[in-house]
Image 1 (cartoon, rainbow, N blue to C red):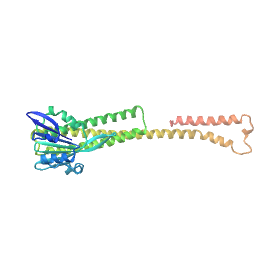
Image 2: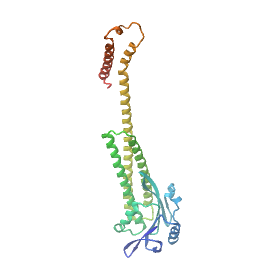
Image 3: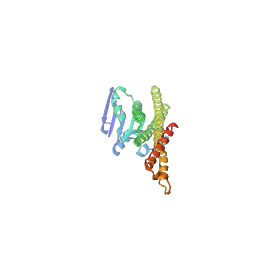
Image 4: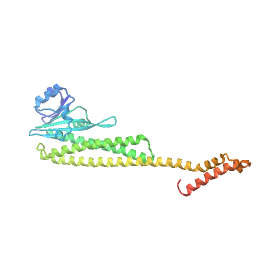
Length: 310
């Protein structure tokens, strides 16, 4: 599908279809298009669109490429899939006064950008590109805020409920992976914005907007660093609590074992096959042995408490 934004007599028109292509277009949005549609766009606007392989390249030269008449940008947009954050490539080509975007997935960023067209009132493709990036940065901020709330929930549960279930550790690990993915994604935007700031394609009036976005991205990076440090702290706290719980259990078993050692010794003594054990012939011999075992256990327990080992 191909959607395009054009300006005619001060009016912004968002339309779909190849038959409506015209010179007043400032944004062509290619979403999961066919080969025929891509070929038609390339022919009409005299551009060479990115292939899927080129969009997924990780080299820095493939992320941002500027020539005399156009800029090519490949960015990864995060998409949530089964509680995981998946990177999907989105490509941009800025040429003359129009922008071409290529993507395989639907993103809230693009839907929001369409909604903001009338309020933003872009004059050309550079304005549209900056509007998309600005909207995306806001979306990244929402992602980080949502992740921060989830981390806070784990922290409160760990402190109040002393919840040491395995799922808590798995959640912490999952949030660490999400934080890493978000951070890498934001760093990529930071590099692209820094390159745009040096570009000749963007008018002087756009530089202040770009610098503000760079500052916003820097703030988001600081926030991700804080979240990652907090997750490491929670992970260490969880493991520390687990160790304390294990030590407590081991301590209990150790105390129980030591308490029953004197009675076991006494029982073993009376179980020896000696011919002469005076108490065996006395009527009070059995209760005496039982009482001696109880007294030895109590004395051992009192000794532990006095030493504050319990």
